[in-house]
Image (cartoon, rainbow, N blue to C red; front, side, top):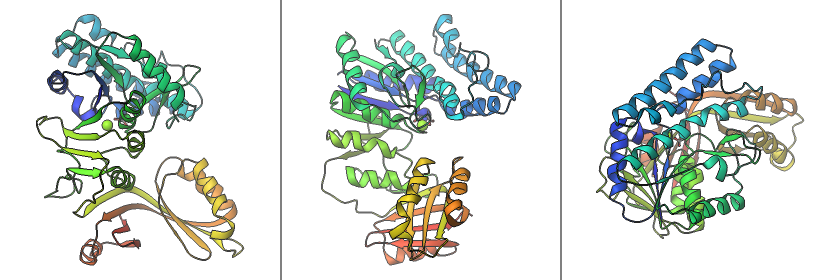
Length: 412
Ligand code: ASP
Ligand code: MG
């Protein structure tokens, strides 16, 4: 059995869905198809959440209507029945989903509908066009804790559930949702933005899949983001360790959490272009080879926080675990660490959790910070490359090792 994952960009419209049919029709073996929400639906759903959270009901209603109309129009264009069309976003995201006074919990109950509906639509379209399939519901199979918006998966229970659901079915093709799961008491959860890759990798791990293929709007894994850099180079093969470093540094092509589940079972993970399915793309697998071109990765919207011990004590010896306890409790994502005798600086993603974390850190430490920053990681760097990247930029911090340079720069 193979796992195919289609991201939002590959299912953004009717033509995208038709293309999924073309790609999956080529596959003769058993298949699990994992799908994200269509196009920018997750962002639109976040706007519904925020509008409701701020009591702007009419804004929420018009956002919801736009999402529903768009899905129904695509289903209509694909020739799906009235019944299928009307079932899409039939749940009214404003009046049918009760308000709860816990932002993260509330968020997940609304945002999960993106994947629930894209998978419903795709499954119906494939069934109507010769690819008989069964729809699997991840909220019932992928069981998580209650860390809403970043739920942790119970691997043992979920693996058992997924194996059972597939084992009991006569189907050869399954369609299911990326990014979402459910708690034992039946609340919906999400696994973190862009988490569909992670879902695909987990499913592959559970069923010992032959491979995972992530179909994307890029030719494969490139040495830089093609939206930022001209003349990018395709990396045909990379090891799990290189891949996890790249993803962690902020390479958008693959979610950092998706490497471990495939590495643990040595399952190859392909990244291939959905608009050129004959091309090989890239593969992440068990090889002992380094990438031989410099790789540039930008992680944007960073904040550099510096903490200084108020009593002039040595920070690494006396305060490190207290600092990281606060950072982890507030779900900050650390992208870089640097220390001196009495200070420690961390670069973190600038999320909505930051202000509360800073408030708590400030109780014990003198805290200063800079926002509006980006972290550039260059793997396979050289003094020339580093000098070129540093030129004409306002640099707050540079860290280098033999092969890797990381610079924190002011966003221009
Ligand atoms: N739809 C979710 C998001 O946009 C998950 C994903 O696309 O992987 O973050
Ligand atoms: Mg996506």
